[in-house]
Length: 141
Image (cartoon, rainbow, N blue to C red; front, side):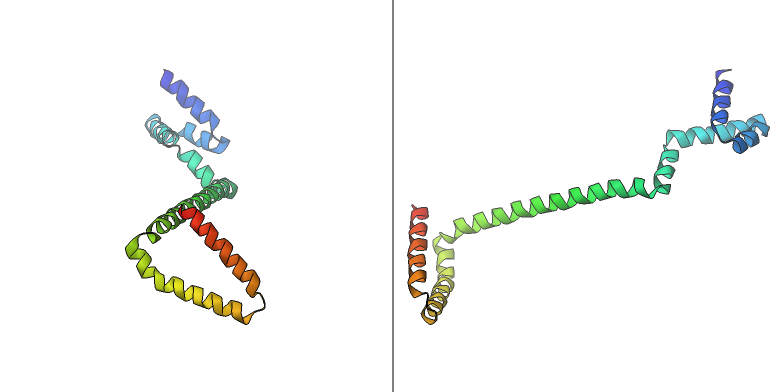
C-alpha cells in the first residue's frame, strides 16, 4: 500500500502531461517507470542534467577552480624556486663548485670594471663594490 502511495506522490510531482501519460499506463509498466525515476533520483542524474543545462552553474565552479589552480601553481613555483636558490647559495661555498664558478665570477667582475671605466661613475661604482664586498664578508661570518 505504501509503495502505491509513494508512486502517486512521484507522479503528482511531475509535469501534467507526463503524469497523465504515466497514470494511463498499465500497473507493470508504471512500476518500471517508477523504478527508472527512483534510479535517476538515487544517482542524482536530475541534478547533473540541470547542472549541464545551466551554463552559469558550470562556469562559476570552473572559474573558482581555475583561480585556485593558478594560485597553487604560483605558490608551488615560488617555493621550488626559493629552495633551488637556497640550495645554490649553499653549494657555491663548496670548494669544487666554487672553483668551477670562479672563472665566471672573474669574467663578470672584469666586465663590471670595463663598464665602470667607460662611464663617469667610477667613484660611485667603486664605493658600491666596497659596500657589496663588506656585505658579502659579513654574511660569510
